[in-house]
Length: 209
Length: 209
Image 1 (tube, each protein chain N blue to C red):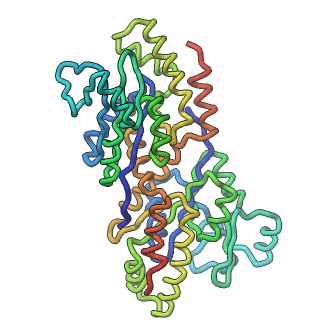
Image 2 (image 1 turned 45 degrees about the vertical axis):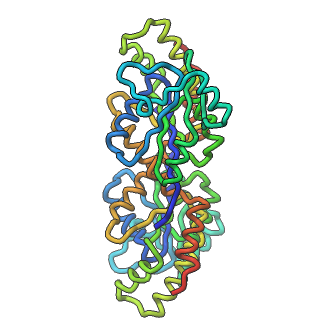
């Protein structure tokens, strides 16, 4: 009926917001949704497959691709570079498939410029206190590390104005957050924009009867 | 958690689009959603109750309320005036309740100015041909009346650029259209706007730990 390009969907959120869990559930229940595969300079971990989990590039290769303008976004985290290849995103969108990117706020800011019509979603914990509790429950990090993560979270959340939507991931109610993300995607497909206006005009306004 | 005003939701669409059927289903499955009651100068039909189906006003009373600025929108259809009382809408929004208005494109244009943050949804039939078929199936009108309705439909659809969203109501798939409307409302509640930004800042950015 109405032909449209695929939708670019960005999901961000601080560590402990549950964004990765939400994305994993979406992967299971939305078989048609494509998931972006990031490129990175970090070494593959046990079991990680090149082209499935990540595209693993050497520093030289990554740098070459930056200079060739091949990245839709890239940033440094820890000691490694991470990025999203433009071609992968474009191939998906042009074939009409939606593509979901789980990325950090720096990358999202870059993508916003390239894809102003994308759907940018920020996942939030119910409260600052809850975020601390979640990180402490993991019991994998020291109190110092947790405080550092909370500071990073504050800085990330301060970028929320770059996003279109925010979804609270309340404790023990992840399915509600997933439902909201699904709805945000469904709603975005119903948006009235220039591309659909032309098609509507051709079908309804210019037709004779 | 986050406190928000209610949401103003406008549903429009040409005769035969199925907007009234969609609204009726929403009334059953969304008990918390309030439905606007229009004011009109037409006489009550058998069984219609003042304050439930419509607010029935005399011509003099309607005119007085126009002059007092009591209408959020009003327009003339056929020989009668129809309108929406500002107070009813405001009472609902201020108490945090969403309110749904099923109104024509003229009224929607007026409401858009008063409520730029409202959610404006246009219901469409799958095609121009399908719209004609639906109107003919009703068998209540002459072919001339149907052609007149189709011309009005064209004119109405040409206002679709005043709406945020369009929902196709495909033949025999009304539940899909209802689901899309539900999602549009759910997504609108997740929008990042000035009001929530302040609350997010207070909860996450300005808190100490």
